[in-house]
Image (cartoon, rainbow, N blue to C red):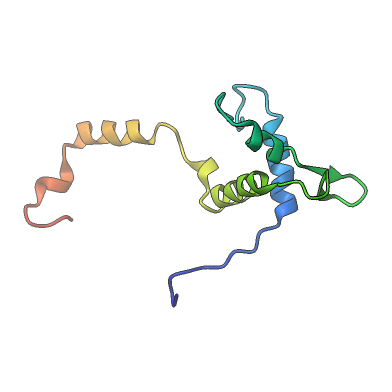
Length: 116
């Protein structure tokens, strides 16, 4: 697709290491990895299907033939969040925008027939 796609090369070992650190963050801590209580056992099995080999620094599947698709999807989701700089987003952005609207009024609609 001309001009519509951008290819990203992802260092999966970096993001697997990062995910491993996030999973270890104390509950309620900054960067905590949220896993819902309703998560399936299949997801958890695949999430835990790889481990890091300390000597090589690479991640490998623990058991030959084991599925690791959910783990890979989670790693790619983390990489996508990094690309979009999600960690720099603030939780209170919506409240800030509402506060500005109240202070300045609805400035977008002050120019009839034009959006700016």
